[in-house]
Amino acid sequence: MIRLKQVLHNENGSITIFTLFLLMAAITGIFYLAYYYSGFVSLRQAQNVVDSAALAAVQELRNQFVAKMQDQSLDTVRKFKRQVREEIEQCERERKADDPPCPTANELIRLYIRGTELKYILLANKYDKVEHWLLVVREPRFRSDYTEEKNGDVLYDAFVQNQRLIKQTALDAMEKNNGERKLKITFPVDGQPKLEVNGIKAMPLGELGGGDPALIKARAAAGVYPKEFAVDVSRKIPRTISKSWPSHGE
Image 1 (tube, rainbow, N blue to C red):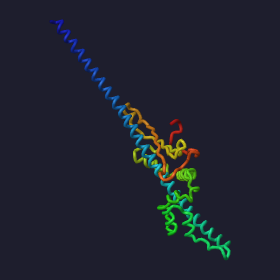
Image 2 (cartoon, rainbow, N blue to C red; image 1 turned 60 degrees about the vertical axis):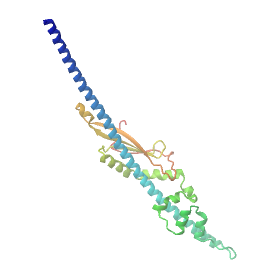
Image 3 (spheres, one colour; image 1 turned 180 degrees about the vertical axis):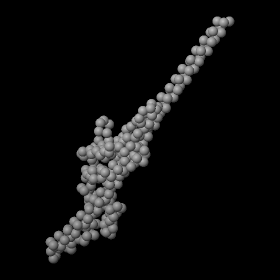
Image 4 (cartoon, rainbow, N blue to C red; image 1 turned 135 degrees about the horizontal axis):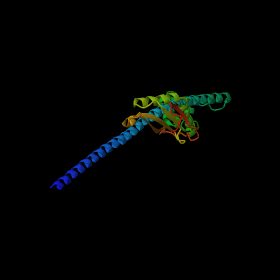
């Protein structure tokens, strides 16, 4: 009887130790699951921050690019009208008495402009660069002024000339999403009209172990691909702008 009680006592002790072991294992597992889940969430949040910065930056670049294309389209229209006037003036200087009359400006516009909508706008002298610039870009008469390479030149210049504004736009987007004011922006990317943003977000990963918050880096790219016409920046040297970006490593 005494021996039986001892055996039962030992089995109860084993059960207690085993239960404690399972409890400790469960706590450890929960700790690591929480740690890695927090890490996953942190990475996702960091990516969201950089995604928002890339979209904001490329939208600003797109706006500046369109503004430059609009200005260029107005210059194209003015140049065309000047050429029309010069052609008429030359005709009048060289015209003999028995020659047919020189063409009018409207006649030359009808002759040279193939796009119906643009033709009527020019005839009515109502060209507006904001509303009508795409008509100029797509007009066969002006095809040589709007090749893929020349459009790419305009896009590249828009980035170079507006680097500070593009950078500030991206920084504001990161700050709005609780990101660090540290980034690096590159354009173009792999010869494509893409803008890449590298950014940082501080995450409390280290707090689980009592350490400092971790700095999570992420990158995102967004492209400027006009639907109405093509751009080519394949020959452009990538340019990089940065703000407090670590110089060591990526």
